[in-house]
Structure formats: structure tokens, C-alpha cells
Length: 134
Image (cartoon, rainbow, N blue to C red; front, side):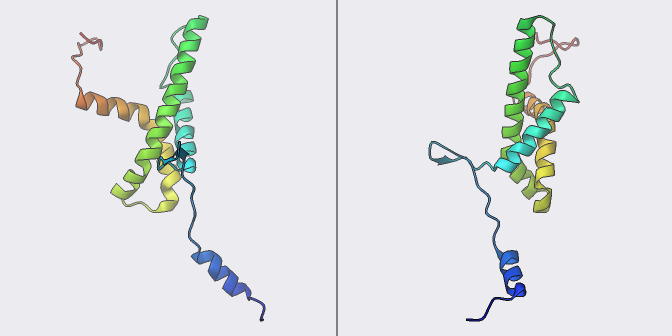
């Protein structure tokens, strides 16, 4: 049996499909890719830390605990939003697959503002000129 040449091995590696694992919970495929979730989480952390999307409310320990929990929930919601919306955005604007993690990072960073805008479009609040709800 002849030894395989390097060109045959390289062609085999180049044509192999990329196997990406997906996350399952209780035996149900959620359709979320771990790499996209991590990129969305990183974008959420950048938005929280650098853009101050969740500003601190006070200096007491109750305020610090409340702010920390709120930041954790914002990071979770932003990464889930990026995980589910990234494939749809990639299809809608016809971007190549290598840019997927960059799109997930951007969606994770802007998810809080985009989600707030979408919720207000669906259910508008009666807001006075001072920014408070009546």
C-alpha cells in the first residue's frame, strides 16, 4: 500500500466540514453556538464597563448588590440576544462567515439599547418631558 502524499492529506483537511457544537439543555437543542455566546458576552462586558450602560446607583452595599445583579442579568441577556440574532443578521446582510464573531460582539455590546428600542416600539410608554412615565 503506497504512503499518502502531503497534497492528498492537505486536500482532505481543506474539504472537511467544520463541526461546530451546539448547546443542549435537558436534551433539547437550543441552536446556540458557544463561540457566538462568548463573543456576545465579551461585547456585553465592554458595554457595561467602558460604555457604562448599567451605571452604579449608590454607595451602600444594597445598591452595590442590586447593581451587580443587574449587570449580571444584562450580560446574560446580551449574550443570549447575540447568540440568537447573529445568524439572522448574517443572513440578512449577506456577510461572510469569518465575520460572525465580530457581528456577535457588536450585537452583545448594543443589545441593551436595541432591546429597549424594540420593546418601546411594540409597547410605547406615555413619557413626559422629564423622561419619567406618567
